[in-house]
Length: 189
Image 1 (tube, rainbow, N blue to C red):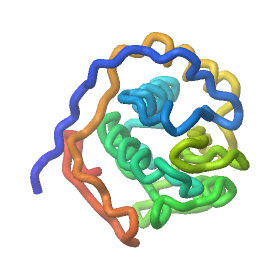
Image 2: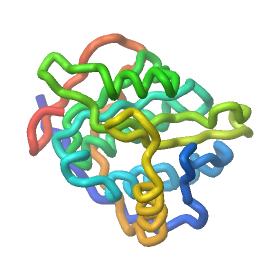
Image 3: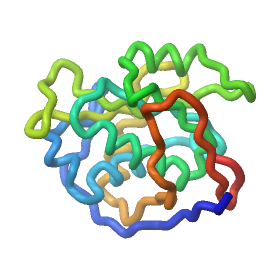
Image 4: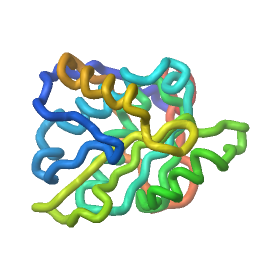
């Protein structure tokens, strides 16, 4: 199996990436701008302690709205780039917010791993579709939303971000139930 490589990608900040307790919500066309989602995800990784990222297990799923499948692939590659060891994704990328919370709190992997957090892709009751809303939020290891101290740090990071990390992985088949593994310079992903 070939090793995947991690690369830094230069970027510049976007105005207004301030998350609330419900995360960051914008129109899909805003999230689809080059580096927009990536900046927010990297700013989130940078706001977390290294123990919550390097070697960690994360959950990535959402309500299935437009752009979710693309966003999941981006987040998987960035998770690998930031040293995350495992990403648990619901089949077809689908898990409700309460289901993600339960997975974080209750699921134990075959190797004893537990999730340290989750990226949840939802804009809740807001309309979905190519011209409608998309959202992303981060839930912590207790299954609940990131506290204000973390969301404030995410926002501060979005204002100064200069690069994000990503891995040159192929897209993962999120329609299939199973395990997909890759080898990186820091070990298995």
